[in-house]
Image (cartoon, rainbow, N blue to C red):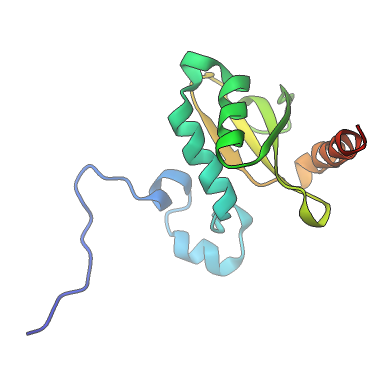
Amino acid sequence: MTTDTTTAPIPGHLSPASVHRTVPDAEQGLASGDPALSPMPLDLVELELALDLSGIPEHGFCEAVREAATTVRGEYLFDLPASGLACDAQRIAVVCLSRENGGRFGLVLLSADGDQARTVEPDETTAGLVQFARAFVGVLEKL
């Protein structure tokens, strides 16, 4: 007996690639090394899942990110207006995911509508924010 191992799309179901990817052929983007199409690190996926459970409309952005960071054993550091650092976002929160090897940081972006959040890796546009976060953690460690 042979088993068919191919998968068919489930009607009404969105795959993660179709939700987070804007390029029609995500595999082609992965092969090209486009960072927007690279897989999200596990710690950011965990943080995003924790955010989905915390309910931004009920608790507010700051508290929702703080609760999600605690859930994944990270530390909420601060949030501030996006001020053009991220497209289509009104606020950015910085979470320290690990203090090892100089620290690992994740960013949480509040949508322009204020009704949802997503996690992203820091990039060249947010490098200054990450440097500030590292200095902030350094001060916290000395207290």
